[in-house]
Image (cartoon, rainbow, N blue to C red; front, side):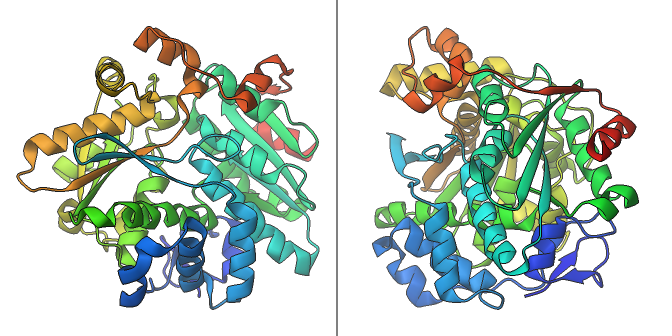
Length: 432
């Protein structure tokens, strides 16, 4: 399959080139030239398949022109030794837990699959790759874990100083070896801008084989579609239409859900739910897309004022606002409303949610008030609540157990290089 640039349709790349280049030369994003449909037989029996079996079927449909089914199966098995279970938290309301991987965040799905896919190609080419990635919290930890000690790959992670949780920071600053962390004096948008500019800089692209592990890379998006199919498989027996509520920052997660829908996943509606960084909910209500500088909130991984994947989200619907609106509803909530959602679920069920998950819960509750239809609501839990320990415990006025793998991080030494948000200095660091 070829992948085209969202800015210039005539600019195309193979799967391997799209994965390693990350961005086309015109600074667009890669999109598949066509979206395959999964068979009726697969959808009829999906409830009988494991997560990895689902992933192989979906992955082969998307990648089968470039990678054999056996190799897709190897990549999937190397990537996913963990599940994505759904947990009931109310009538027709389920949490899709995406935090059972190594970094305990949903980005493990994309990062580990990307690392396995790159390793597949590198085994043939013997190239060396330098990965640049910006993180607002969870991406950095997932990429660090996914690419740690992978031969032929070095990783540089940029994160905004003071704007990630302690555990998130430890996850991306304590590994060392082929993982380097840059603590940027700025916002996530600044970090993302630095990464994008690096890919367009002739000096850097001449010296390094650069790749990105952000959701701008198509190989991050593809595996995220797998867990939408898995969630449907786990709730199919209920016999009701499914609504997915997606906490959204850079909108890769929602774009992956729409990809699954375009491949044949039966979805009634998607909810694009954000914090005060509400550029997409405002677009959905007005048709106007107006990015703005990001606003700091307690759901920090969603503090994105100019989401990169917005163009992919709309391209799946042929850039037609009415088509987007026909499948996606937008909601946003402030910090007080987020804390209220966390307390509401905990007081009623004892279930502990991170702030991002609570934002998705609030969106689902709001949609229920407006909808007259009966449906199964699935909200995406994007991170383990212990990753935001102080905030969660203060909000719930209760102690939250810390998984051993996270607790061990707290005593480890942070190793990060301080950097300002000027591209010239970032470039000098890379060249030096």
